[in-house]
Amino acid sequence: MFSVSSMRKGRVRKHQVKSLGIIWSKFPQWSAKNTVHVDDLGRNFVMNPQSGLKIKAYKKAYKNRHRDKELLYLTEYLKLIATKDDFRTLEHENWQKYLLHSNEKKLLDS
Image (cartoon, rainbow, N blue to C red; front, side, top):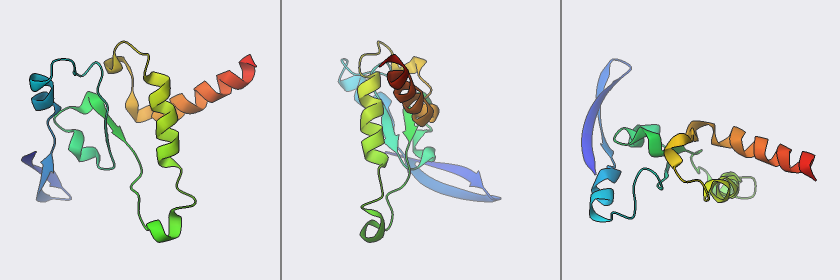
C-alpha cells in the first residue's frame, strides 16, 4: 500500500491506496484484463481506477445483517462477467445496472 495525499473540503488528507501493478508484475497471469478491485472506498482505486468496483460499506452488522444483500448481488455480477475476455471494457461503476439489465433480459428470454 502507498500513502497519497488529496484535497477534500479544502483540507489535505492522507490515505493508503493499493497498487495492483505490484501484483500484476509478480504474477503475470493476472492483469487489468482479469482483475476487479472491490472496495467500499472509491479513493482506494486511485492507482488502478479501471479495475475498481465500489460497493456499499457493511455497517451496523448487528442491525443490518438480514437486510444487507450487497455481496449476494456482487456475486451475481462477478459470475456474469467471468466469461468476459477483458474487464477493462466494463464500466464497474454501473455494475448494479448491468446486473439488473441482465436479469430483466433473462426474464424476457424465458
